[in-house]
Image (cartoon, rainbow, N blue to C red):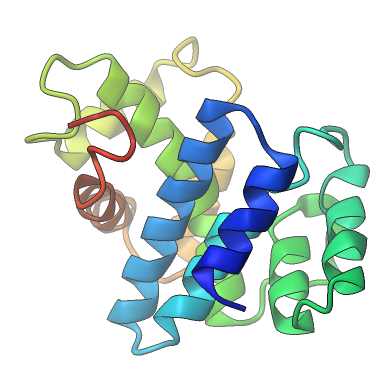
Length: 185
């Protein structure tokens, strides 16, 4: 599957600008981690694009991800992509474990990139000059972006074998490369 084919599916099911930006952010972080690990950058990017494509139509667990998985299977999408998408949601464990580098990375970046974007929106300089310490300070403020699961952010860093500071730094660097696309330039 190409990135353009994945984006077409995403935009068929997703109209919300914030969800489209989230998909772009996750895609970018996934590509970043794929490159670091000498993995298939295009495949990892496609997973990032599609990971929440069904969320607008099926926002509640377990329909979110499971209904999307069926749609993707009906369209002939590779099971490697479908399984990875299923693995990022707690309700699909242990049937779809986070047992590959791609599955681990998707879980690790999903919540964190959304949180980094929320932090960037509060800063006059947006992503420019952002440091992990700025993000960690906001993580401690439970009322800031309260819906973000802080435990998942920490678990994600551990899952990919990085310190939280290093994981945040990687995600910031990735997002900086597309900051204009995200409205943060």
